[in-house]
Image (cartoon, rainbow, N blue to C red; front, side, top):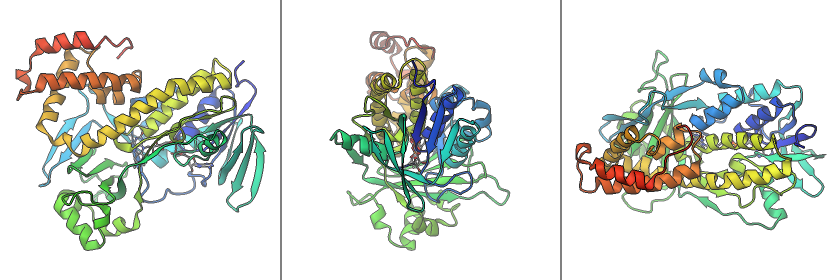
Length: 459
Ligand SMILES: Cc1cc2nc3c(=O)[nH]c(=O)nc-3n(C[C@H](O)[C@H](O)[C@H](O)COP(=O)(O)OP(=O)(O)OC[C@H]3O[C@@H](n4cnc5c(N)ncnc54)[C@H](O)[C@@H]3O)c2cc1C
């Protein structure tokens, strides 16, 4: 009954989700035809300035474990157990993400991770990977793909079942929407990002604490840095494209090397001190855009389904885009084990869309937290209180960040809804309360028992 047994599945896009999906299917004996527009990443270096490293969290790690990659991924990871906040004078303050020793997120090189996935995918005799081949059109009624090679030659090929894993710019999504006259809304964030580098010191070691995600929160904008295995940090500046307020700088106001130097030495002096190539990098690296998009349809209800950023792209502030894409892969693979492709893809859309919508929203909210509220004493008090309530009520009150990042078995939509209730409880308990010892724990107990049913999953 499953697709699966005999049919070949064609996957467009050999990024993280397409490569992981290939492995999951291939492990079950399914033949996969993987088509990737770019050259084989295992022989080419990634372009400078484009999301060099990523934060991997429980959901992504769980998916890699199910794909049999748990042991191999370990050597690529740097644990980050909390945020290191940098103030204007360069003073730092560490705030842990969770309160249990295993509650960390992990910095991983995007290239190394994708290489690992492609290596594994290509080990299966029944997986065929075509690089430098772009899917330029899909004819859903004839089940035909138009493929464009690097030399611009065009060919057609048939598919039996199709998975669109071709990222935010997905052509499969575009064709799917065109074929049904459906319009998608694409929200461009008015802020862009620029990737820069803090190199290793002369002993090839990190120049800042390696086991933290560094943040320089500045209200309307911020700088962050994630560690790399070679001792460097990838630094990302998030800044408005245009100034909407005279007190907030923007990319549009940074015209010259001296503008950049002035800007960094004023707002990020300690980071600037360890960034020798800042002016060159600033002007040679691209300024990236960030979008929120959730495709209104993920399947043609027959032979095609979208996963990962092709189905739902989000801003990067919760570090969940790829984690969510990996969760898609295991969910779709799970459904395909018991249902025909058509039924599985419809069920996949039904189950995943609410979760994609929830994490998309939480990713937007997290930008405000990272660049702004994280500096406020109220935020810190509420965080301490969250940990205290989690200790007292571990099956009922789990901080929202922890639900998203450390609990792969709590769906995003549940984390989002419970997070709203928890935020109200925290607001009530901390209004006019200066410190944790003064919080009314009896009131907290009442509210939690009344409003937060026990989570049935093992948490
Ligand atoms: C600055 C930044 C930071 C981020 N940080 C994090 C983070 O910390 N944690 C996290 O979980 N996520 C993060 N993300 C999000 C993450 O990068 C994406 O969610 C993830 O890459 C999605 O994987 P994907 O395979 O669905 O799509 P992609 O990574 O976009 O891969 C799509 C693949 O399809 C190929 N392709 C595209 N079009 C075609 C075509 N027509 N034919 C054939 N092949 C095609 C592309 O070449 C590519 O290889 C970040 C994103 C950005 C921009």
